[in-house]
Image 1 (cartoon, helix red, strand yellow):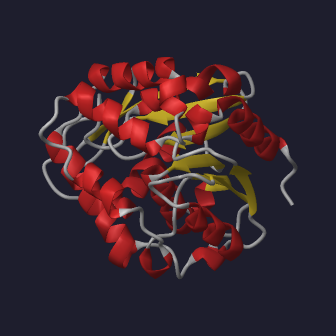
Image 2 (cartoon, rainbow, N blue to C red):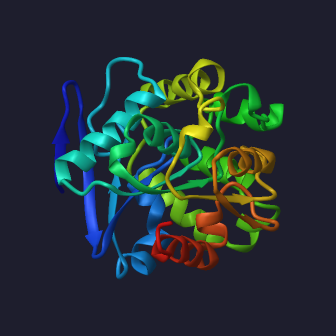
Length: 271
């Protein structure tokens, strides 16, 4: 699998499919395997670029703290390396923080933007419940499989994982196949905390000038639905599509509709 050597770390990436390039940015603690329900449906239409965020899975471990902006710069480096800009960029959750920050720092490389289950951070952010936040912060004390099952059952919409055990099994298998470094998890949590306090994009959304689609489940327990509404209201011309009864994982919980919404938006003419 190809890799990109940076100054102090290496990013592993994959390129699959054909068509205009789409970079997929995963969320907290997850690897490129998170997109398993998107690869086959999207790759006949798009050139998919997936990668492991710094310190995650097959990318090299990192030895120092970083910010969401640093992760956005990693995305720009991959795009420059592959010479595929301007391209489409899609981020989920923390990956959405990265995607929105990328849109502001590297607009020359961006054609269209999709923000899934994410937020602008800063003073406009509406938090999850204390219970959900405590679950993410206190990840220790359980074996990886038990914690993954508990966390993703809580993050999905009501009863989703109970009625779709095959999806929960796949999430667990992906997590066990690419074990998460505790240090990297803490670095990501610290980067998220910075985004929520000083590094967010809440006051800069009107500077995002590319066509933007916001996708959000209305039962999202981690990044409440109002955060997606805020993005759609503040980004000029943004579209928003909602997923009734869906939690934090629309790309898994409502994959068929999610993939169709992505393709419809990316295939539409650019104004």
